[in-house]
Length: 495
Image (cartoon, rainbow, N blue to C red; front, top):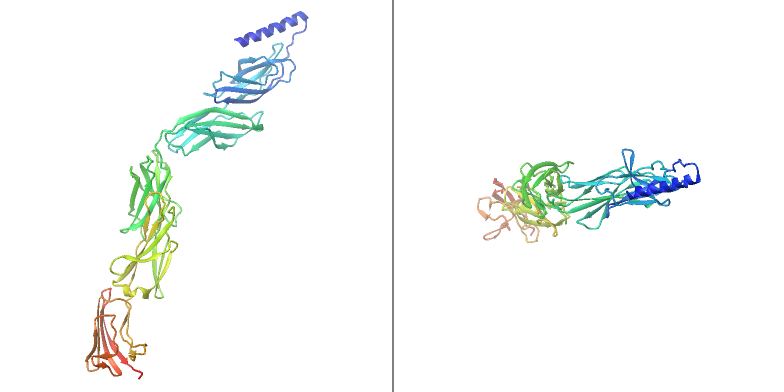
């Protein structure tokens, strides 16, 4: 109302001067100003306008308008021809978008055409707990006459200082704030960056996120072979409120995981045995936590079973396996376990870097007491991991014992250290053994049930004469075969 009175007084004064002087009435409106810049002051809620003055010489002031549906609604008049800014203390731009124009007014009360319009930026924020994000959206800032170069998004958490969260191009008017946490109060503001360093700020949008706390980590403790199944262990962040999980698997040669089990549990230690897995194949597993909408919120590190393979070539056993990978701190040790017929026991310590081992058959043949002999690899996770210390055991690989018997046909028991003893050579340790040596009249010269005992070419009375003698061998192999052999042995002394 006060501004209206001021305007009427100016009009009366101007009219009085014109009447007194008898001059012609001025009916030409001044040129419009240019509305250069508009911003909201978030701390007060006031809106600030800046403009370029009208070039007309008789400007008396400026009229401030809200602009709606291409119409201006006057809210105030600034009676200062040199004014270039205005602060609207009655602005509601914290609650809605506002659009403004201005006009110049001359000393005759003529009002210029309206300036170009500019608008405030109104920001809204909504939480999408299914995706774990806050969506920030706003109306575009009109980029004329000062060009818009882009937007920055600033975020504050729990009433802390604002920090820049991201930027978007001028044509964008939305931004997703990711990795939000339950119970945290988030505030966001958008700043339109204009040429020349001008910043037009939006209102501040705030909300407190109400959702289940997702795990910040999931550790795949191990994948191991046990009782013919691949057994998995996962440890979940104890602060997590998630209760639903997917166990995912893919073959080592595949590129895509598939869900093999969905679990609902409040436990932070999750064990699962895969009933469909073939332990002679290599798989990669991971655990995914789900929110209430069924969306994945966190994946564990991958876990892969150790796949061992055994070949027998050129009297050598060749053992190959893939090293366990994706443990956070790697492998601390590997051990080869062997069962030669009496149960598994540690056979050899291996370097964490090993994945191939060659074993000469002669090094193990006398340890074999069964039809088959078997191996498996055990890997231990290095210390320092989150979750359970990992141990992974490979599949078991086996081979049949090589049951061979070789019997020489001569020997020279002359104490020269060369070929002084006679005995059959076995590639195995027999479960029963009987060796007889007789002369041609079937007189027993030597008899033994110990496969390690050798004949030295003597009988009870002393060295036997050079000549041909008969031998008879009866053994039972580790695989259960009864083998009986006979032949001759020639004694030759070189003195």
